[in-house]
Structure formats: structure tokens, C-alpha cells
Length: 253
Image (cartoon, rainbow, N blue to C red):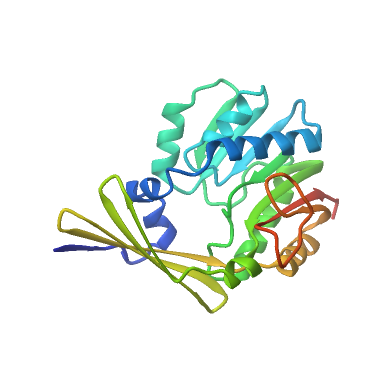
């Protein structure tokens, strides 16, 4: 077999994995309808009828496009060049823009009414301080009294119910997935096989819990508004909720 080790020097796991077409094959069956219902619930809760929205870590752009279809001004940012290339070609509404961007770097100042970060798209970095940079950049990017919404896994429940091994067959590819918790991270090692070829990737997400997010908010100028535990916006319960979704408002520093 030919092995392809995705560990190039100077590149992090997310640089390699998110730009791989195999990433999009593995996750292509994410529930589009559930995501749209969630976005609709957020829009209703915040009574959004107009304004500018940043979809931070927008992936291939389908959620940014869904927001733009509602007449909102939307910008989608993602670290993956391949994802942004796809989004820019697939979604061409005049009120929608896409850019390749690292969320640890500033992007526009006092510009957005809302910043959304969907589907566990934060916590990829080795140092907790890097996450604080992200929150600080979101604060700077928002207009006064703007809102952020962060949708993260409920790390406490995810660790308790961790599935150590899993196999999936998608489009003729065999995905062999191993999960473990190490040094405060949930690590997923992924071996992919097809036609005598083998690819090796990994995912590493910090197991950020409620208290971590509270610290980020307090240290970067946000006031917590509400915490939800699922995509129907039910209340958050640390032991039982599937998601940890926080809504916070920018306060002046």
C-alpha cells in the first residue's frame, strides 16, 4: 500500500485536513435541514431583520449563503483556501463575500452587528491564549452592542460518551477513526483507505468547558446573555446537553 502521511513541517493538522477533499467526504452528510432550523431559531430569538453578519469559520459557505438569502449582509471567513474557493464559486449573491482568513488575526473594526461561529469551529489551537485572541478579534469586529453566538460541543458529555473506535465507508473510502482524550484535547486519528492507498490525518479540539468560555468573555469585553444546550435553543445542562451554545453581547472596555 502507498501511505500518505499528512504531517508536513510547519503545517498544523487543520491546515492539511480542512483543505483535503477527504474531509468533505467524511462530513458531507451533516444535517442541512437541522442546521437551517437552528439558524432560523437564532434569527427569531435575536429578532434579526437586517444588519451585517460574520460567519466565522464558514467552511464551504452554505450557512453564510442561507443567511444571505434572507437579505442580510454576510461575510464568510475560513482558514481553508479550498473551502473558500468552492464557496466563492458556488454562492454569488451580491450581499455575500468570502475571504481566506485566520480567526486569530483581526478582520475589520466596528463593522458587524452579529458574529456567528457554528458547529465546533473554535478550539483548534495548542494554547488557550489563542482562543482569547479570537474572542478579542470578535470584540473588535463588532459594532457597539453587537452579539456573538458560539456553537460548541458540550465537552463534558462528549468526553463521557466518547466512542474510542469507529469505521465508516463513504464513496468507496474506508474511514478508520480512533478517539482519545489527551492533554485537555479530544483527539481524533483518522486512517483512510481506498484502492491500496492510505491517508493519515488527525483532528485535535480543546475540550473547552463552560468555565473556559466564561473566562474568554470576561477577559475580552463581553456580557453573557444566554446559554443553550441544543439546536432547538433549550436551556443548557452540563451533564445532559448535546451542545454548548453561548450568546454574548459586546460591552465597551
